[in-house]
Length: 88
Image (cartoon, rainbow, N blue to C red; front, top):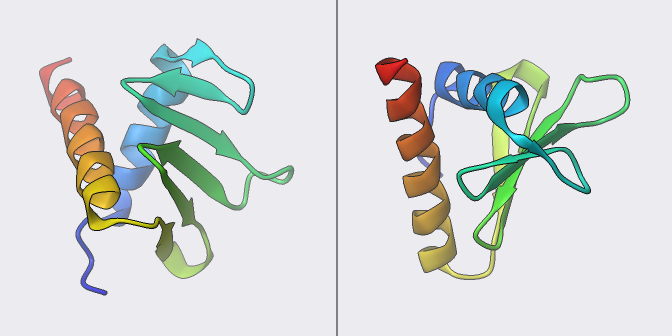
């Protein structure tokens, strides 16, 4: 799978959601994306649009989804949040 998102984007979006998101059952929710981490904080997760992204070891990530349209919508939401980072 080609890397559509770089590690800097993923971590920046995760931190932005943690700072600006609303408390949700699994973590913080912002812009349709929920951000949370495992107990030790070593692996972070972004979840939304039917996609679960797991990011961790060696700055690699894995996307779990059933349909390409879910992945496309998820990446679009990540890019929208990234744009807000640049606007702040």
